[in-house]
Length: 136
Image 1 (cartoon, helix red, strand yellow):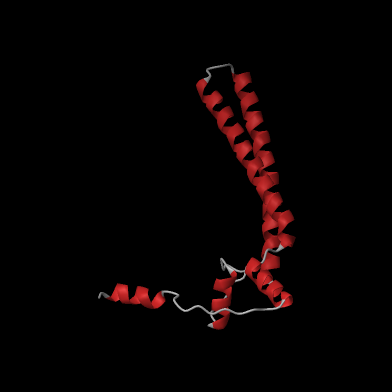
Image 2 (tube, rainbow, N blue to C red; image 1 turned 30 degrees about the horizontal axis):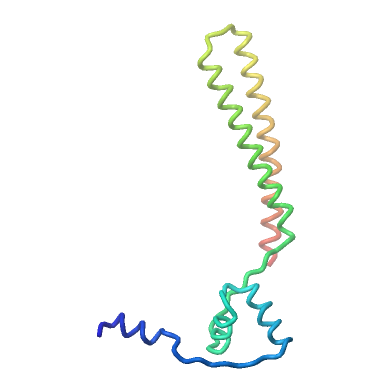
């Protein structure tokens, strides 16, 4: 028998253990299961019995507002970038008057001002998040 086959046999869960718990204990287990990476109460119970590490995940709801704002800024910056690309393409393709080219330059300048405002807001958000994470 190969070493892999021997390891597989020893890893199999062949012994059954049954137990009963009261409602309060079961609710505690369910709560722990909801926050852990375990897939079932059986897996959770096995880890508890063998004192294995149980990974629990918690969501920090105070991060919802900054994350939504970061997402919004990302979308706006992407839209501004698309507009700049379209204006640049039109500028390079058209062989129009100097006055029309100045109009394109003014449009791009205004878009870069918007980018500057968004980047400033982004840097403020990042410093706030950094302060929050580094205080822990």
